[in-house]
Image (cartoon, rainbow, N blue to C red; front, side, top):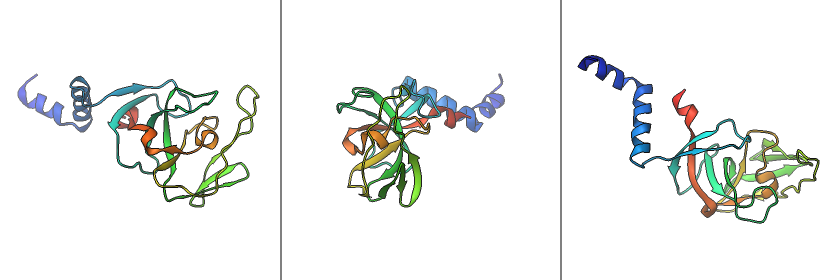
Length: 164
């Protein structure tokens, strides 16, 4: 490959991103996480590290350490659906954030067992987040409640959406 073709190849935006990601992974700047969780639309995630706060719709990775028959001790990736200072309300089976429907809670799990639903109406306290998956059967904050900032390990980006 001649020098001009090589420069052209390297400067195409998608190639530049791919090469940058590969170099970042090799040198330990970025980390890749694989997820078997079907509650989100993606399975390969790029680590962005711990942040001071997380914006709506950002994805976060955390280890759930509270007693829970479904997820205790597991690493999870969920999306921020409502955050500190936002008004989280529940109307019947629906949760809203600042008046916008965000998720519907189910009464039974996939095996027919009853699900305990999170009960909350009010302003989300400082440092807390309401996290959800995109799948209607996602096990998330509608059942386990708010997650505190210190419990979140890092922000992650779906790798597929960065590349294509």
